[in-house]
Length: 128
Length: 128
Length: 128
Length: 128
Image (tube, rainbow over all chains, first blue to last red; front, side, top):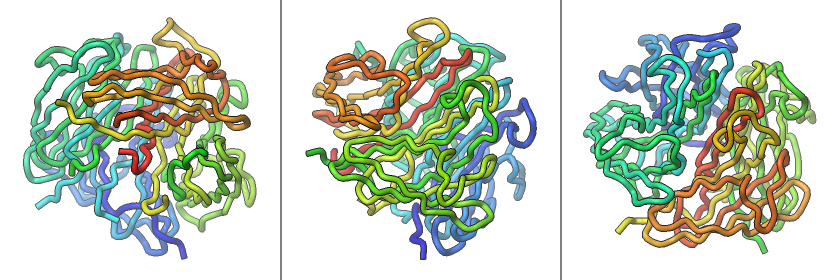
C-alpha cells in the first residue's frame, strides 16, 4: 500500500508556449509541461482547464495517471477539445480525483541555447 | 460557477528588470512578469506595492483581472504612479479583492541567449 | 541544540536526466540534484523512491545526511538498487526519519551554454 | 501602518557559488542571492547560518533589513565570520526578528551565456 501524496486541485498561473524552436525534436522542441506524480494506489482522473487573457476558459482536457506512475504532460500535445495556441499567455487549473503532486516546467529553445524554468504549482488549500 | 482558487495577498521578494535586451521586441525584451490567475466568478481588483533597498515604497499600481481570466503583467510596463527603474533591486506585494494565484517570471536577454526563471510567489497566511 | 526544520516526506514530480553534456566534468555534467538540508541534531535516514511513466517504482535508494549537514545528492550517481535511466521521465518521493528541507535542481548542458532550474520540492502535509 | 508578511525562519537547501564568471562586474558576476522583503513597520534583524556537507555550520552572519525595505543579499559578499567558499555545496537557514519573505536566486555566468534559477525559500511552520 502506498499512501497518496499531494492535493487534488492545482493552479499554474504562468503559461506560454514559445512559437519556435531550435534543435532536434522532440527533446529540444520548445514546450510547457505539467509533471504529475500519482504516488497512491488508485488511478488519478485529471481534468485541466485552460484560462486566457481575453476569452472564456477552454476544457476540460482529460487524462489518467495510473497508480504509482508519473506523467509529464506537454501542453503542446493537448488537442481535445482544441489545441492550445502558441505565443499566447495562458494559465491552467488541474483537478484530480485523488491527491497528486504537480510541477510546471518550460524548455524554451527559440534561441540556439535552451533556457529552462520550473516551479511546484500552487496547491489549493482544502483540496487534500 | 467557478470556485475561486488562491489567496488575496502575495509577495515577490526578488525583483530586477535587466537594463538591456537582445533580440526582437516584445517577446525577447528583458522583462519581469507577475502572472495572475483569477479562476473565480468575480473580477479581481489588484493593488501592487513596490519596495526598494533605500527609499520608501511606491504604489499602489492598480489593475483589474476579470473573472475567469489570466493577466501576465509586465513590471516593465507599469507607469502609474511612476515607472519602475531598470537595473535596480526591488520587491513587490500584491493585494487582491478576491483569491488569485500569482507566479513570478523573468526573461533576461542581456546576452545573446535568453535565460529564464520562475516561482510561485509567497502566499500570505490567513489571506484566503 | 539546533531545532529541526522542515518535513519528513517530500515529492519531486519533475525528473529528467539529460542524455548528454558539454563542458568539463563533473561541474558541467548534465545532472539532477536533490539538495537536502538536515538542520537538526539527529542524523536523517533517507529513502528515495523513483516513479516512472510506464513501469513500477524502483527503490528505496538509501542514504544518510548527518546532523547539521547538507547533502546535494545527484540522481545521476544513485545506483543501488539500479541506475536511473537517462533521457527518461521520472519523479521521486523522499522519506526521512527526521524533518529536512529538500530543493530540486537541474543543470542541463546538452548545448554549449548551460541552463538551470530549481524549486523547493513539495512538502507533504502532516509530515512534520 | 504596514502589516508584516511572511515568516521568521526560512531555509535554502541549495547553495553553490560558481567559481568563475564571464562578462562585466558586478551584474554578470556569478552569484547567489537571498532576496529578503521586510514589508512591516519594524526593522528585521537577520541571522544566517550556513551548513556544509562535511564540516560544522558557520555563522551567524548578521544583517538588518529596515522597515518597508528589501535587501538582495549576495552570499558572495558575506565575510564575517568568514567568506563562503566557492565551488562548494552549502545550504542556509535565515532567522529574522520579524516576519519577512525570502526568495533564492542564482546567476551562473561560468559560460558565455548566463543561466538563472529562483525559488521562494522554505518557510518553517510555526514561525509566523
